[in-house]
Amino acid sequence: MNVTEFRSGLRDWLDRNDLAPGPDHSLDGQVAQLARVRRALYEAGWMRYGWPPAIGGFGGPAVLRAVLGEEVATRDLAEPGIYSMIEVLAPTLISYAPPALAAEMVPRLLNGSEQWCQGFSEPGSGSDLASLTTRAVPRGDNWVITGQKVWTSLAQYAARCVMLTRTAPGHGGITAFLVDMDTPGITVRPLRTMHGVDEFAEVFFDDVAVPGDRMLGRPGDGWQLAMDLLPHERSTCFWHRIAHLYTRLDRLLAETADPDDADLGAAYLALHTARCRSHATQRRLADGAHLGPETSVDKVLLATAEQRLFDTARDLLPGVMELTDSPWRTEFLYSRAATIYGGTAEIQRNIIARRLLGLGKD
Ligand SMILES: Cc1cc2nc3c(=O)[nH]c(=O)nc-3n(C[C@H](O)[C@H](O)[C@H](O)COP(=O)(O)OP(=O)(O)OC[C@H]3O[C@@H](n4cnc5c(N)ncnc54)[C@H](O)[C@@H]3O)c2cc1C
Image 1: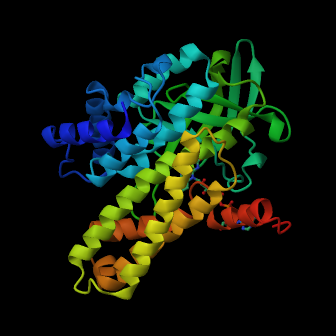
Image 2: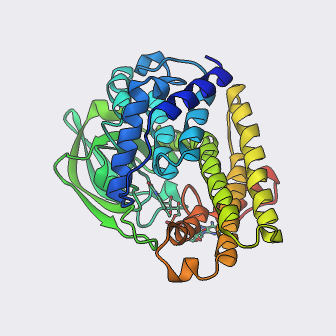
């Protein structure tokens, strides 16, 4: 199926099948709504296009997944950040897990029966991810994991975690596993964000025994896995988020008393620039290009556009962010995280300076 047929068939189906969220905007409600949307889209087949038949997909170009996420975001059917996690975790499993494990697990993520999380960051290792210290040591047929992760989004809802551990020194000593979150020895403590939501968590691992066949790749492949994950995050996920931000721009235009304000034009331009860049990235991905450090430009453009949009909303809707509990306030506060998650703005600019422009060290 080509993109045009897919999009028109999908739109038609979405017009006939009401997946609009209910009144519960809590995180519990959002996660339940996400599962409902995934299940319905999977059962109707839409969620299976663009994924390989080996994991139950219908095949076709990956760009169909970008189109699906764009429609979901444009109709506000699911919170885009948590919807898009699938685009990071499922391709990683497909590339690195033993084929039988990927075939068993990935459909559970696609069909909404499970939520997963990504355990990379640690208290001492965020930007400097390669310094992570959560240990995995072999014991019989198992690997035993001890250590702590932090900022693990949706860990309290997750059935499984794609996580990085240390099995030897250096970048080549990082090893990834798919860990069942109900394994004895795992403790999840939710953390509250400044927008008032327990979106992420600390996760403690105390002698957690993980079967050897849950290793993703081979010992030492974890750093490469982390690098391979970035292109997924910076292509399809960004496309979804940009679609979401356009809905907020439209909403702002409808609500402001001053739709001709120059700052609105600047916010539109920033968003459009991010979209053009993301479009080019999608095309390169479709052409089989290997995405690398140039996607740091996408990250900077998107985070800048998101924060400019919500800064403009704050200025044009006086008092709404500061004095009300409206969704504008929540989304304004969350937009501050755009320059942190997925690699901070400073780190992206270091990468652009060093690796793209050859300007020397940090
Ligand atoms: C909403 C949200 C969701 C997240 N979800 C997840 C998740 O699901 N899984 C996960 O593993 N992680 C997640 N994270 C964590 C995220 O990846 C880290 O916060 C991020 O990588 C930064 O690491 P840090 O917080 O340890 O900050 P640090 O690395 O300690 O950085 C602190 C400050 O120092 C600056 N800095 C650090 N090094 C340099 C340098 N060399 N040059 C210039 N400036 C520097 C940084 O830019 C930053 O401003 C999430 C974060 C947020 C905000």
